[in-house]
Length: 418
Image (cartoon, rainbow, N blue to C red; front, side, top):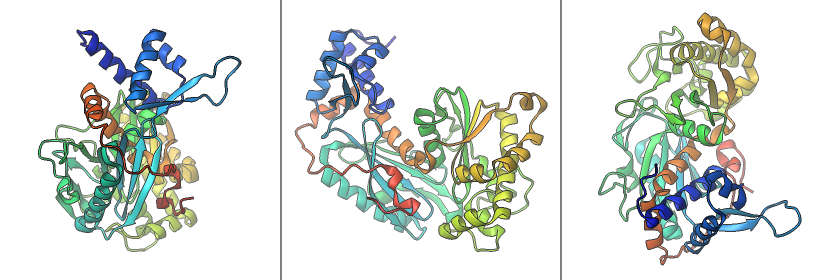
């Protein structure tokens, strides 16, 4: 039951359903397919689409290929439609993108920072404010992914950067007057990068349709989260599933989080740097770590072995159907998958060994955290209330529209945008 009791409520409910379907499929399905998927009458679907086009939420284009007769139309994002500002704040740089309905992302800015909250978030806040000024009412929210546990909607701790209870919305200049809403009513969602990456993997990657999955994100350190029915489990305070801070590999180093023997001490860019005797920590050394990853078989083998050992323990505990790896985890699996599996299998219980979960690299690579931040914004927007706010703001036309550029061209990967 959808809870609608009047024709107006039912129409609002179906508007949201249709927009959600367009967004989730990546704006690839035709109107006929969407009508069938949502079990709508053709006349109802036509009226809904017409209204959404009028409200500058959808725009229809002919399908790339069609047979004889009238062209088949594909509903997609309106050229003046809603945009989510999504940010991936890593330990050494941040990336800002504008994301439209359907998931296409345009990289707007990439900037390194010195690892301090003031430099990282101060410069980012300025960039966000400039884009809000430029894009006007089209900005429906801001999603921010950070490499650490997030409490109370915006307080982040990043142990290896010495961030403790950093108030992210405040330093961004987006401190909300009410929970979840910045000045002017634009929602701000702050979350853990691995949890966001897991959401993206469940929506658009290799955890789609998986009832219980495990997602691990490897950057300077290691993060992980259990995904149940497409949702990451965050714990009572939203800081659960800190798998990287569990003693899964028998190490004895003291982690900056305060615990001894954390799994993340043996997996990730910092572990690669330490393995070859280079300084690690503080979000420095990405290029050196990538060089080690590309050239040192010994360091890669040690990382992959530790990753496999930890995965075995988590599989025993949670019984996932699939395990996905993002960030450097993709490269570790591609370069040393046999080593990873050889380390994982002996640690599995016999009942797990008989039917082990599939382990594979993410379909989204490094993009997951950014796309998950986007999803958090559209989740808040794709509601009857969100669409009502959009219609009320239509008179405030956008001042500019960003050129479309796929996030795979991010300069985070050392590439220059076209």
